[in-house]
Length: 86
Image 1 (cartoon, helix red, strand yellow):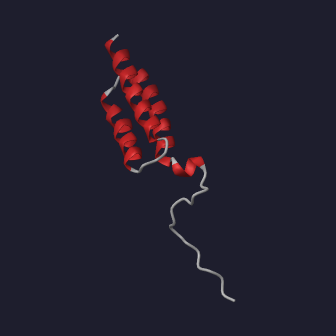
Image 2 (cartoon, helix red, strand yellow):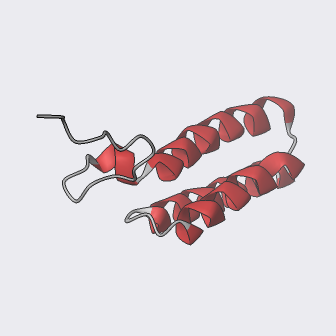
Image 3 (spheres, helix red, strand yellow):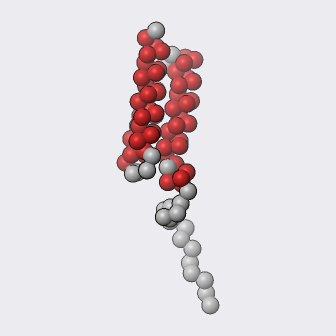
């Protein structure tokens, strides 16, 4: 008559939502947007390593859309560097 114990720290199930499977990727997209805003306003490009390292973390976690995080980080770096050169 006892209920089955709950799994407290279980990973996403097979039918998990898209967000749950790609949390780091979604975070990277937000960080990239914030980075582009800061780079445009202050002309500081050195902080661009942060979105790149976060995108690599998404790839290491084997997120289905991890490649989107890498593309977004690389594009952000390219845009920031080209804006700084002008």
